[in-house]
Length: 360
Figure 1 (cartoon, rainbow, N blue to C red):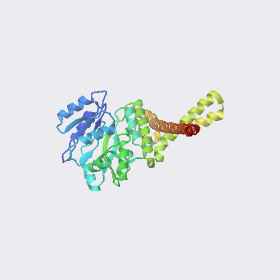
Figure 2 (tube, helix red, strand yellow; figure 1 turned 90 degrees about the vertical axis):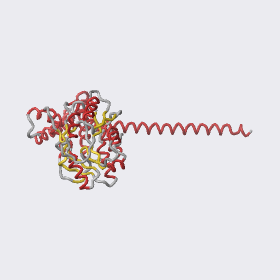
Figure 3 (tube, rainbow, N blue to C red; figure 1 turned 90 degrees about the horizontal axis):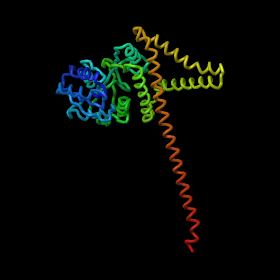
Figure 4 (cartoon, rainbow, N blue to C red; figure 1 turned 180 degrees about the vertical axis):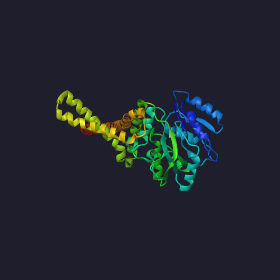
């Protein structure tokens, strides 16, 4: 388990681990990052109360580094590694059932679904968005589906031998590290297995700013995964960035028209994408918001738009930053080469000019 600023949720997360009905031995290692709240003192108090729990430091605070620190600290005799975090609550039969599936299928990693549970109206709207294709797309660990091989799963229950073969989590990826690890596992010819009956409860972000920050980061790191593994790109990952780019272009066109062009035709054409997008979001909200109470229902369209546009802007800004940095580096390399060639040519000219003198 990793924990960063989880003072509020950590006791419940730890309690869910020690409530497991798993018949074999079980220990919990919590890697705590440099938090701004009492997470470390809470973790230490919990470890004092549970002899099978230990706390280790995660100085960087990054999730993959913390996971690797925790894995390194577990009992060397352990053959199965169960990932959880300080924001999750495992049902009592989770580990037992996951290990049974791991043994039955021969998979390298078994996992199931993230089940978001909101308490406030805003959190309930986020929870609904996270379980519908219009919110986060059709990934089975969000929306459900048949058991079987999958690209990725939520959290994961791993054969330790496969984790060691892959080298563990890639610490470069502050986000999407689970997807990236599962990609490398599948490249080894191993199976990642999805089981919809493995359901882990998750508490969504509590306000709009935190939600926007979460998905802006997710979009930025999805770009990094695609940059490192270009074969993983697909239309699902490009939908939000394309929509965001079109809406941004429309906004610029509307501003340009209002300030300079003052053309009714340009204004009408530029208004089409935002009006169309708003219509899609509102229609999607109506189609998938059944059962939401009135307060959550009012948040729901704004939550959907925040998820889409934060994800898309994170992806686009990360891509633009990398591409411009690469372009600057290529220009710098070209310039260095030209300067080197000029310096070499100058030295050759000096040698030719001096040659008669030296012969004399």
